Length: 296
Ligand code: COD
Image (cartoon, rainbow, N blue to C red; front, side):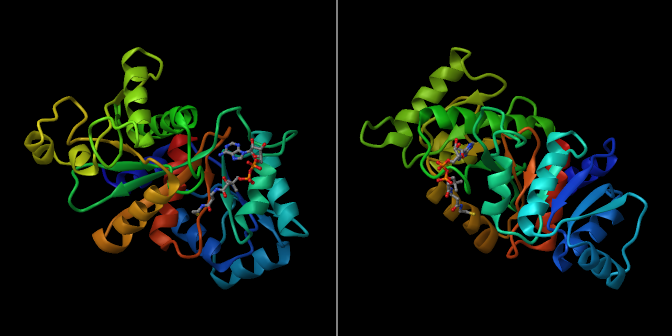
């Protein structure tokens, strides 16, 4: 599967509404324009009303499914957007030009936020030239040093996202530096626990096998060379990273050194959240939106 396929799938789904917090922004308008070209056009744009109208007019964007709601400040925009998703008036939450912390404070609001009791985690879907499928990587942006219980939930969030995108029984490789359990390397101990929890039916809907060094997870040749069998080795769909820092470095390596294309969402809330940043390419923002629509 390619990210373009995810985009086409999102466009073909029953219409989903996207609430954008602080939508008075040129980059957001550009993303809306591109999304509309693919037939994704049900947006609730929240922010400074005059600013949104001016930018849409300048960029010649119009459509009957664009609703604009005025908010006096980024905090107000975040609250209105989150409340709209909470009230099921929108299916996806998207960050516009406001700090992530301002939006996440509203997402985590106990009264009207999007908490589910599960943890929120980042799920990235990569298309890389040398791998034959989309590879999901988690968690590279939210949970800094997850313990075993958090890794169980991070895995569940990624499995759900991959399944929604059409990956049948995703193969999960909890990544470590080695493939043998070493009590001094917590990632290997957690990986072995996750594997056994999966075998005993405590984690369902996927196949987990680890610990795996990265080469074993994604190269059948490397796996064969090291004598590691099983259904996951060499063909992982999901790489569970040992911690955020390893994950984040790997994520950026794929983009800057391997020509990887990526989309990403925050999963685990009652609706998917798109947290794009200014350094993301326009293409990546669109893929993230498509991924959110497909998993909503
Ligand atoms: N899922 C669900 N609820 C959460 C989560 C989560 N991942 N994190 C915090 N909460 C809830 C807690 O239950 C609590 O009710 C409330 O939020 C505040 O919890 P704190 O005080 O532990 O949260 P913070 O604000 O100290 O930390 C949350 C962050 C997400 C800010 C923190 O984990 C963080 O800084 N993560 C790394 C973000 C980052 O730098 N990414 C870099 C790449 S972009």
